[in-house]
Amino acid sequence: MTTVTSYNPARPAEVLGEFPAADAAAVDRAVAAAAEAQRSWAKVPVPLRADIVAEAGRLLAERKDELATLVSREAGKVLVEGGGEVQEAIDMAAFVAGQGRSAMGQVVPSELRDKMAYTTRIPVGVVGMITPWNFPMAIPSWKCFPALLAGNGIVIKPSELAPVCGEAFVDVLAESGVPDGLIQVVHGAGDVGAALTTHPGIGAVSFTGSVPTGRKVAAAAMETGPRVVSLELGGKNAMIVLDDADLELATDGALFGAFGTSGQRCTSTSRVLVQRGVAAELVERVATRAAELTLGDPTDPTVDVGPIITRQSAERIAGMLDHAVGEGASVAGDSGICEVEGCDGGAFFHPTVLTGVRPEHRLAREEAFGPLLSVIEVDSDDEAVDVVNQVEYGLSAAVYTQDVNRALRAVDGIDTGICYVNAPTIGAEIPLPFGGTKHTGNGFREAGARGIEQFSQVKSVYIDYSGRLQRAQIDTE
Image 1: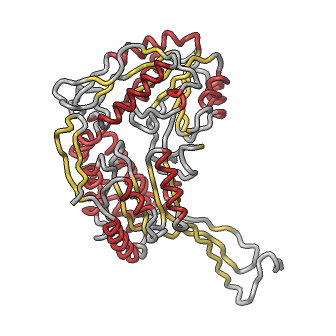
Image 2 (image 1 turned 180 degrees about the vertical axis):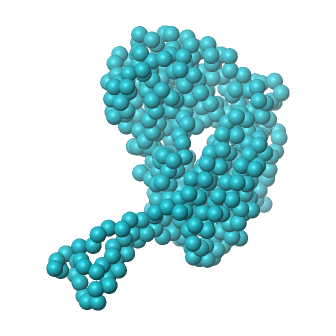
Image 3 (image 1 turned 45 degrees about the horizontal axis):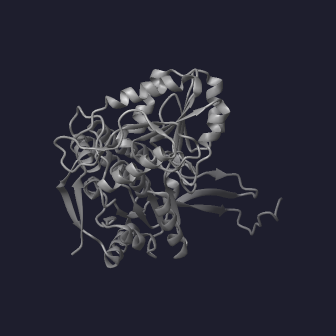
């Protein structure tokens, strides 16, 4: 039997879990079981579904420390980030549960007498979900909680790099009162994801991952049948630092945005666009602070930066670094793959600051998904905004300035789904929608009040109590 094995990225010899890999037949069974349970679940009143989501949040809060450690061990996040991720799932449960007692449609005035016109939302049936390793608790919560509230069944494929976290999250849902069979977990790689997203019993697909894989998922899903497809893909996020910015604050933001989670977030700050007059000072501050960050076992509370998820990923990042230097960039401080005492085999990578990067360079355009921070010097506010918008991605951006007028002009001009002022490109909060423009996604948003949209369909309802035939757009008296 083929298996999916989870390893601790800080110590790859340490096995965290092992699960049977699914095949097409297993996907068939999972979809059938979720569909069977969904028929009853759809009849449960929405506020009662919300109560179960709220209970899941309570259980997550009760086990926060235990789950945070699990996230640190499997995803390589430092403990404070692991705890933050579990807290995000807790917050999402609270937010979605609250939506269970709020409006899910609108009433509009009919043009005819004695007639009601309103909308409601109905489930899509069974949702296929593919989630990444870097947020193995938070992203499943973004998808599962609103999908459950909408009345759907779920078949979820966690990343093969974080299956233990995926199972632990689903276990919490099962304990919270989600009916047997309603949520199914399938493990495996791309072939399993393909079988899931093209299955005729799947009414919607929700995918978070890379742009190339997302394009394949969307094309395959739409080719085999009409279904809702939601994509949350990559980012090449930029932080603008204008010449009146608080440089200490900007330094804090650059360090957290670029090197938190070892740069392995879709919202990580990978470009700093800084005005020339303050560029040298900012680089010195960031490079000095980056050299002081402690790399090591992420479950050690004194550690600042954990491992890259796999050795292969670390080597890919190193290749991008070498290419950048070949194009003329310079490294300010330490860089490259390094060894950490007590973490045999772990793929650690020095937080790296590169200067002399130009907008046309590969590293300024392509997602590195690692701790590489490119510094690009600009002359003006308008040039900074223009450089932000030159890439194919449009997820997150930030601007640092003490002038509200300059800040708002930049916000207006930046083409991203998320924008921050005087804060890094990471740190989205639950009540606002999460997602991006251009090749970052396909228009759907997760979290916020719009999070339920990808997991439900709008039904328009007309109730005529006039007792006679009335014809819209024809009868006007």
